[in-house]
Image (cartoon, rainbow, N blue to C red; front, side, top):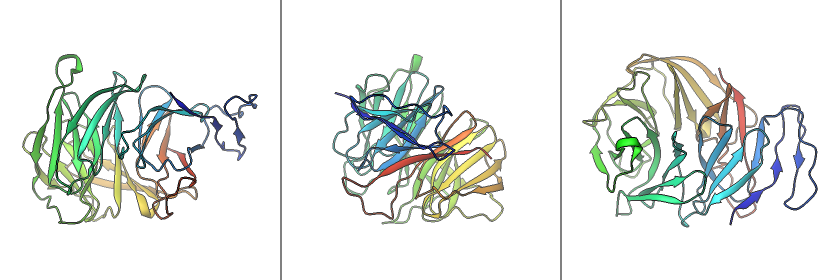
Length: 311
């Protein structure tokens, strides 16, 4: 059964409306796209994904629930119950499938974004020293990072996007060196030319360019910029957005086509940021969930997502 979050979010004018399931409807805000909107109490959001329609998907660190929100209204519902373990980074493909990283469970799953049905599950790591963190989908495969291991997990896509029965582990070599016990590889994206991948290493603040066939890495030249607390990545055209979670900042870079270098354009901050973790975009705006890592999580802790104009 879907669990409905009947909330209309605060809009740019600072006006908010609340709708409770079964109650009379309250007048919708004048602007069709709220600038921020609440997520369920205790949800503990981390990942966000937005496709070609005004729908955002969020994953819960608390129990793995998946939430679907209409960006036009801020209304949402849990459409897929979690496995009791975390849902971390996620992406949605053109076939309305969500690829979901499973965190410390060492796994991932693919979920029908319309029905919530689990289409496939993949076990990447069986030991306790794992944290499957984020995912990017290319034309050929979905690639997952592991923040505890120097490895990428590749889920190859077959004809018409067919999901395979197994995966391939690709060791990361070259400049990328994982620090034992630290939080290493985190957000992942594709280079503008589509020939390589980009991975941010949270503990070093480095951005790495990765050959997806060999796993060989090279540090991206960012002109001396260090991506401390680097988390979610988003590449659109030749623009790279890097969420620096505990710094409450989104760093914006102009990238070389091959992703080997980048130039800082600006840093976006906002008073509404409360440890945002990941980023997606729609209609000229960036959307970020506030993970609130500096606030102890409880079943009644409040959470929200915010949007800012693209820079």
